[in-house]
Length: 229
Ligand code: 3PG
Image (cartoon, rainbow, N blue to C red; front, top):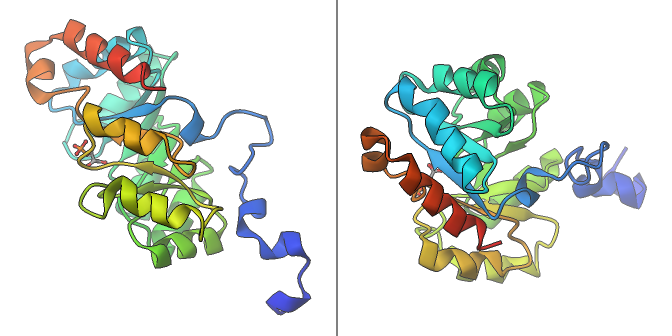
C-alpha cells in the first residue's frame, strides 16, 4: 500500500507508537521526573546506595550507563534491592547490549544514537527506550520507525535549547530528553520548551561524591533537581 492509500492514522508514526500513550495509562519515560540522573558506577558497592539517595531526594529514576565493567551488575543489584526506583541502562550501542541490559533487569534503555539495527534491537526487548538523535533527519527517521520519545544528544554541543525550540513547530510529534552538557543553571531553559519532557544529566552523581560515599550530597542534588519540575 502506498502512503497515499493509508488512512491518516496509518500515516502517522506517532499514533502507532506503543509509548505515545501507553496502553496501561502509565506515564511515558519523559513524564516521570524533570531530571533523569545519568550515572557512571565504578564500584558495584556504590550502586544500591546511590539509587537509594536519588529516591530519597525525590528522583525515583536512574539511568546506569554501560561504560564500566560493573554496570550490568549494578543494574541487577538496583533492580533487586531498590524496587521503588525505575532503573534503566544508558549508552546502549548494540542490539546485544540492549538484550543484556534487559536480562540484567533494566526497565528502560537509552542510546546515544539510533541506527535501524539498534532501533530494532531495542524494540525487540519489549522495553520502553529513548533513541539518541541530534539532527532533524535523525528525528524524522526515529518518527518513521514509530517512536515519538527520544534523547537529544549531545544537547549543548548540538545547539542546545535554541535548537530544540527551533524544531518544536516544524516537527511537533517528537518529544525529547536532552542530555549532554546540561547544568542545574541551564536545565530550566530546556524544561520550559513544549517538546521537552525531562532532561538528563550526570551532575547529580559526581564521581567524587560516589567515591567518598557522600550519599547526603547526592540526595541534596537530587532534591534540588526534583524541584525543577
Ligand atoms: C550521557 O551520558 O547521556 C550524557 O553524556 C550525560 O551528560 P553529562 O555528563 O554532560 O551530564
